Amino acid sequence: MQMPTLGLANVIFGPIFFFAISGTIIPFIVAMFLETIILQLIRWDRPAACIADVFWANLLSSAVGFYFFFMRVNWLDRCSFWLAAWFASVVIEGLFLRWNRGHSLARSAVAALVMNTASYALLVFMMSHDIRQW
Image 1 (tube, rainbow, N blue to C red):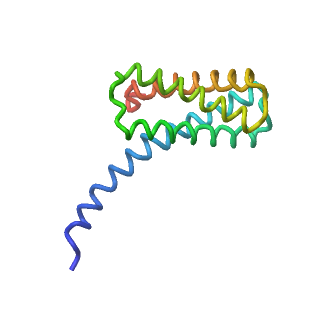
Image 2: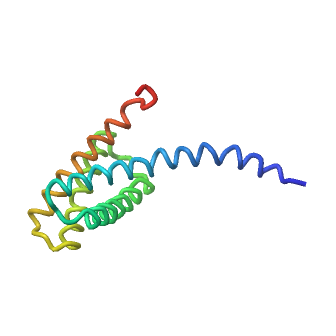
Image 3: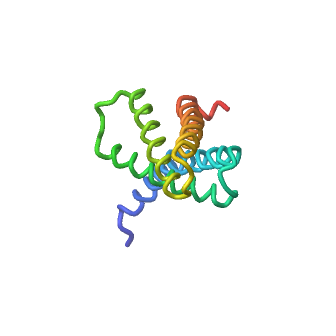
């Protein structure tokens, strides 16, 4: 005899999986793609190194972001949260790029500033518009 909770788990797992993929993994991939292109345009390093740098930098800043999200940092309104997240990403990723590749602090800061400004602008646009209307 099948346990009744398994049927319920099958019904619940689909939407949870869909929202987990569409809400975290897809934006992460979109940001990685955009930031890799930006690093290539500023001639950061070879393509494989740019992909690796962007992956690890975004993973690090995402881990910090998820920590604050799950710690319920709700004293910020939505706009302030995005600005704080953008600023933290620029600082974290800039320091990571400096440490990982050994480029100057100024070059790493500019790279982090440009790639995070572009990716945050795209992600805010994607989240503020109903993608189903595209």
